[in-house]
Length: 160
Image: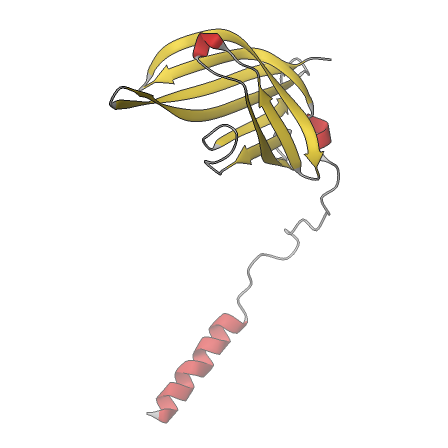
């Protein structure tokens, strides 16, 4: 029995000892540089869309979002009040990182942030070469005994 156990252990070591996690030459060892919080900072003017259970409640409502560099890899997100989609002014910090396909991605996954819900967004360069911002989140609004989950989305262009 001891011999069988020993043979199994040697076989496992032989199989897993030579296994590689990643093929050589495919690992990008380039250090991350830059400050995405400073790159994304600015005022973005665009439109809001509000959706309830798949039906658009409001669309094309003008709005403004301001991103301000806070500390390294942290940005402050300030949403100006937009009465057309029932939004009050909201401010929250968000983690931000450079994204290789777009510009930056930012998020806050704590429901206790200034939005009262988790949110995510991105900045990227559009086809016209202008910097755009998109933001998405869901707010649950109580009306009487019922709760309604409204999905909010924003798309705006950075002003110079």
